[in-house]
Image (tube, rainbow, N blue to C red):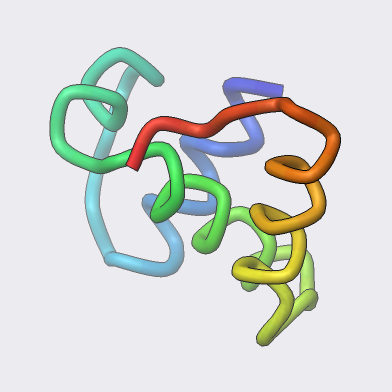
Length: 62
């Protein structure tokens, strides 16, 4: 999964990340989720997904 996230960030932002740790240092979890969802073609649902996870008591760092 981490390699797919790296691929998504490199494509969406035109970057050259080599590790998921680099991305985690620079971006909040919500943006990582948003970039990956958009890369996978799921646009406009990040907030809803985060809200559902909150209702299920799965908390995401902002």
